[in-house]
Length: 405
Figure (tube, rainbow, N blue to C red):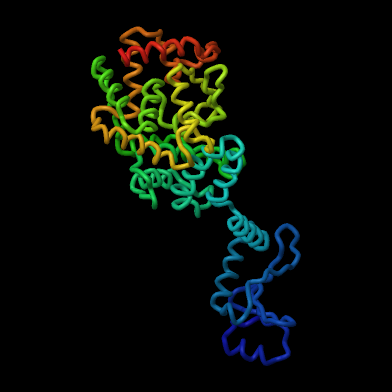
């Protein structure tokens, strides 16, 4: 019968020729000499077969007698519960391995981005998707395992975004809107993870960001909507001495284009014979369909002027690529020079919409088409195949006549 092991007994064993020594305190625990090491092992009868088998506990002296006994007792408890220690150890090791191999949010995010890269334009991919993940989401939750992402993590991320100040920012951004956009992209990324089997549920569902974020402060675009005052405004910008600046302001006033429509306009988009500008998808704001802009004689005259000064550029209103913000600021400076404080460049859209309706220069659909607005529900849009190009051309002529009257 084995006696209780002591350190003295172990020391004597190590100096002897014996190959193994058992502990009398915990049945099955023994110290065994191998060719290159001395190990603790636990010997037991395998469940269901009653055949003797061993399970390694660890090397001596890395594992002391006390620790070896504790582990051996745990194995005995497993046997009492009908669990084989070797099976338990193997499953535990596999679980640890799976944990190490588990994908992080960052890894899944880049998988998701790789898909989106082929679905949207390069410009939109970089400015929207890539920016949302690399500037906001990944720095905060990128290191977390994908199935460890919790609702709490997402809520904390949403709260942090409005406080983030990015380096080299060119303007003050609406952080509430940014937070909503980032959350939307993260939610879609987690949907991808759900469909790939990386997670069992999407923790983003059920989160209402409007309850978490401060109320969105929408900047009001100043606009003149009085008939006489808008005529005076147009007369004022038409008197601007710098010809290129004057023509850019007039072009916007006469068309009600957004700044982005001016900035992104390329010579390739112009059909001189048909007197129309054709903006491809994702070039005029985030248009999914082609947007056609009819040209009047005055607009053609303005375009021809820029052809003489920007002949080597692929763009109409800029001689070389600059940031969109810089272009918008350039137009604002023209207004500032003219001491126009009650109207902004974007304000022409409000002026155009209000006054063309009031003066009944065209029906509502024609006006909304010119502004590139949705006409209502999707059923209406599905049946509205005509973009009313000629009706809008007539509208622009009437609008110009009104401004000059």
